[in-house]
Image 1 (tube, one colour):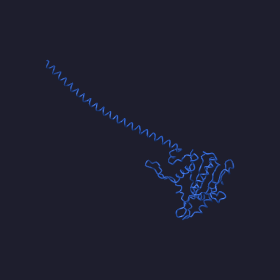
Image 2 (cartoon, one colour):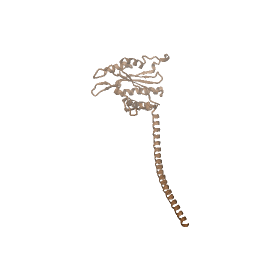
Image 3 (cartoon, rainbow, N blue to C red):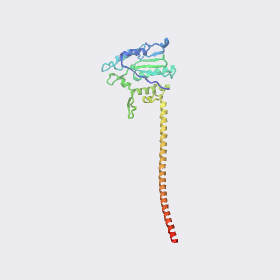
Image 4 (cartoon, rainbow, N blue to C red):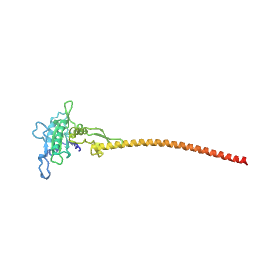
Length: 278
């Protein structure tokens, strides 16, 4: 079982928020085959005083009006960050609803319920999933608020190494978000730990597959090192035997030379004997 990624959706254009909100709470949704499944999506009351779920665009406007900022909020500043948490068809509807409900509560607790703009659980599609929208707000030590989506939801910093391959030089807040979400919410439901970007880029489908690959690689490297050590030992012995063989060849050559010398002396003595005998 694998955990669904938290898909960040950045919205910078104010005029697009209404369309996103209508799709979120099904104000502009057409069901296939005209089957009304209006009861199959669940909206959250993100504020204690709300009598009904507030549309996303209104919730954003309300939260922006509450902020105590030093400067006027620019039109191109990110006012809301959206996330999708999916059950991946791994859970039945009861457990999926519970898992998604805990996901919403986790986001509210992590970033402040005052910044939980809107949340909807959709059960009217193939896979149960939750849409969660957060206002990326941080209150500074001076008491002023600021919008800081890049800081709260920063990706990993990557660069190319000497081999021209991308490597992570610093883990961003989005990676930590994935890790914390898995540890605190998804893990109890049997989901696997999410893969880092560089592992997904290499084609690994799960952390278990990566661990198997790493274990196999380590075993092969260990075996290679053992074989290389045995090869070096044999090579040293071969070198020693070759040196011994060369020494034997030298001694044989010396004996052959001595034998040739003795053969010469014997021949001379035989000739001398023959001359004396005559």
